[in-house]
Amino acid sequence: GAGVSQSPSNKVTEKGKDVELRCDPISGHTALYWYRQSLGQGLEFLIYFQGNSAPDKSGLPSDRFSAERTGGSVSTLTIQRTQQEDSAVYLCASSLNSGPYYEQYFGPGTRLTVT
Amino acid sequence: AQRVTQPEKLLSVFKGAPVELKCNYSYSGSPELFWYVQYSRQRLQLLLRHISRESIKGFTADLNKGETSFHLKKPFAQEEDSAMYYCALKIGARQLTFGSGTQLTVLP
Image 1 (tube, rainbow over the protein chains, first blue to last red):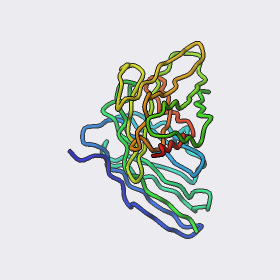
Image 2 (spheres, rainbow over the protein chains, first blue to last red):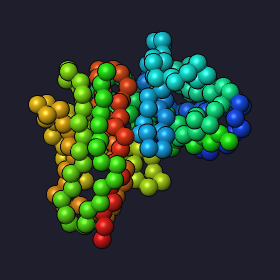
Image 3 (tube, each protein chain N blue to C red):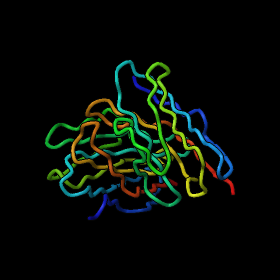
């Protein structure tokens, strides 16, 4: 079956503009995660959705970042008033459930460049 | 807070040589440990997890709670092993906490 998909694959935006990044998880997966991969910084957790529970937003770096998950499926990560330090690859992952025994499947990422 | 440390950003070995990618973690409880791999132009994927005690593509990793380490080892490296490797831990239902990664290059 299809894996996790993300769109767009690349996004170039001007500083100060808002951007929306989309993630389509694997069908039936209840858990969805957003991570950020910055050059030399490794992978940084941003936000996590599990079913109908309130999302864990503890990794969001500022209030310019927000995310929603509609109908327990597709998720959108929104960055308002983008800054150059937001430039990174944004990865989405989904898993069947959230426990440690469930593998997270990653999407190909969206490369965001803020000029 | 939990933390994962991968001390080597870059590691080069010759084909056929043993390879060890180091990973240390800080967490007082019993986390679940994983190794993820990202080959060139491919997406991040799970390589192995300590709870499975498995060997994948010749790689093994043993959890040493005394040393809080989860080093990844392979006795004979192959050129196709060249990739970025991330060690990660998970506590219960929470998100993965990743190390900063080690870029492995296997030279011919």
